[in-house]
Image (cartoon, helix red, strand yellow):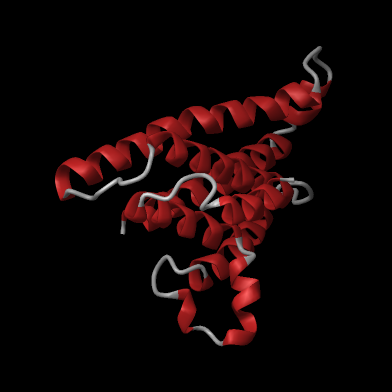
Length: 179
């Protein structure tokens, strides 16, 4: 499933890309050195967001082109809609990565926190098997996960041709995680 592959890559690169880099910089005492420069903290964090968006274009573009050309995967919805949903999802996962990197002093500690964040989404989100097979009592929790929202939105866009209005619920969930 191409939407599942895309979402797993976006989650991994978002959480690990920003979280690991910040903890690594903290461990090497680069954050203290950067604080002494004229660069603001907002600019430093914005650099991670910009890098993430650049990688988003390369990552999503490569996987989509390969999936369409090699396997004939349909993309029935607008590429603009795919791009918007992927960007919001990528930024939401980047925010989770920043949150995971906020306190740990070691890469091992950050790795544990990041895996703790990602593991429930891997199991529950519907990437590997249907989320509807879980008990009804935890379905609201599953629907509130950012990976579930992203994979559901991309499946609707790519396989059913849904537009932004049709995936507004999923975009709301992703935006809430972004905030």
